[in-house]
Image (cartoon, rainbow, N blue to C red; front, side, top):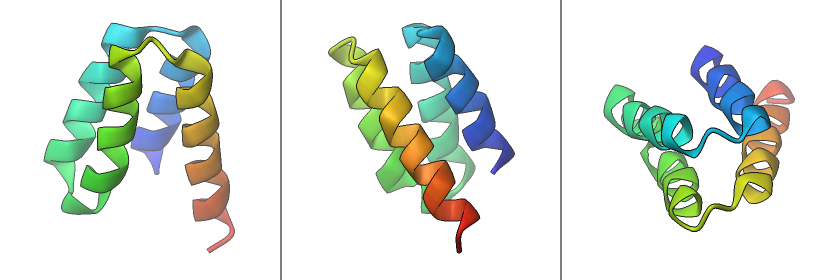
Length: 66
């Protein structure tokens, strides 16, 4: 979950290169993150910072309720 907080902070800052790096790191860190991490990586390529922020916040909120 700490990794998601890092990704969230990067999304707030709008740092696309850092987001892409963190998404890659998440894919390599744990297979559980792989399907999720592909999404922000793709959104970075299209410079969709708001969509990345929404995606990460949704994931964090969903994870905190389970």
